[in-house]
Amino acid sequence: MRKPTILLMNRVYPPVRGATGRILRDLARNLARDGWQVTVITSGPKAGTERDGAVRVIRVKGSANPSGVFSYALVWIKMLIAALKLPATQLVVTMTDPPMFAVAGDILCRVKKNKHMHWVQDVYPDLFPVIGVKFPDFLLDAMSKVTIGAMSRADKVIVIGRCMARHLSYSGLAPRKMAVVPNWPDLELGNEHIDGRFDDAANQEDFEKVIAASGRAMNYRTHQEQIKTGPRFRVLYAGNIGLVHPISVVLNAARILQNQNPEIEFLFVGDGPKYDAITRAKAQEHLDNVKLLPYQPPARLRALMESGDVHLVSLDLDAVGLCVPSKIYASVAAHRPCIYIGPTGSEASKLVEDYKLGMVIEPGNAEALADAIRGYRMDGDAWYAAHENAKKAAAVFVPRASIGAFMERAWQLVGGKPQEKIVERVDDLAAE
Image (cartoon, rainbow, N blue to C red):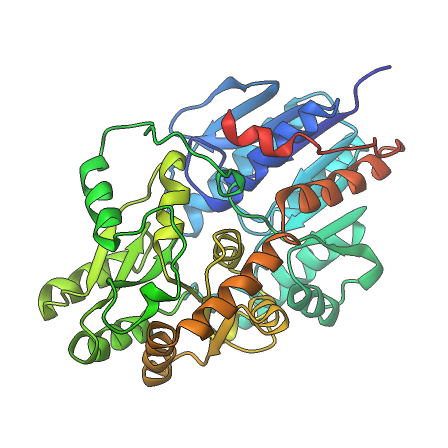
């Protein structure tokens, strides 16, 4: 039997860093293991073709951190041209980096006569004003109509949250066209054991010092550790600190707690447009309760995530339905209480409220955030209850569930039947 063929398209793919690239790689590897012939078109520092196991990866030349509309548009065009040069595949999956890439998938569908699935991680062009990219209103309206039209002609649209489905429905996309498939945390967070090896030596000493300072790496906090005189209490923000993630409220909470509760520390791990602002605030205001680390390799991920007593997730008020912060799934996978700083009605707020994972704080309310953090610091029962609820939620939001749901829809589009135990080996991929 001939293998079904699939083309996956996204601007980033490992080793180029990016959350969308990470989940795309998980999906690509699972598709290949399940009998698909998988090709990925992406970008990188230089053009070329490589192998990621059974997955063929075609890269066009593009900056890892493009700046400006022109840079993204150039990568958009290069990726489309690369796809047009390839033989037709049965299914094309486009993502939303570069923005409005559903239109590229629609063009391919018309030319190659393939099936098209669009995987929405961010809703463009609606997100442009939120991140400060300015277009005239008439141009935004025109781009929105073109994008919704392309998605309406797609065979299936995958969205990552209910709020996103509502937004697109209000924009004119038929609900029957969409399926909600949540993102998933790094597969490394599903491993119960990590052998402690690091895949590079850079920052290892800093990492070990920061983790050791908490006195509890890889261990869950007990009620005894939660008492007032216990060890330092860590508030963790891990991942991209992007333009849709409010950070001033977190810094204001750190300023409040530095004097009132100096044993509470804030650890930021990652990078992003707002990372430099945190660095400047720490240096200029002598915020000794703020620590920073760069992105860490996968081997360190579980130790890092479990070193946090409380995880922070944030989202801009105007970004409801336009994106869903995947950090919340990492918080759940680590079985940690989550304080979500963002608007109600979003997927993240619903998860926190429905599963009682922590608290929802309105953006800008630093006093409420400081009180929430202090509450988990002082009240062991409240912390433990949220921890137990996160543990239960982690049994629901597992990679195999989302990857399996995605793959099932892919099989349906090419006329095949989903195979039994379609992603039974997904957890094994974390070891590769």
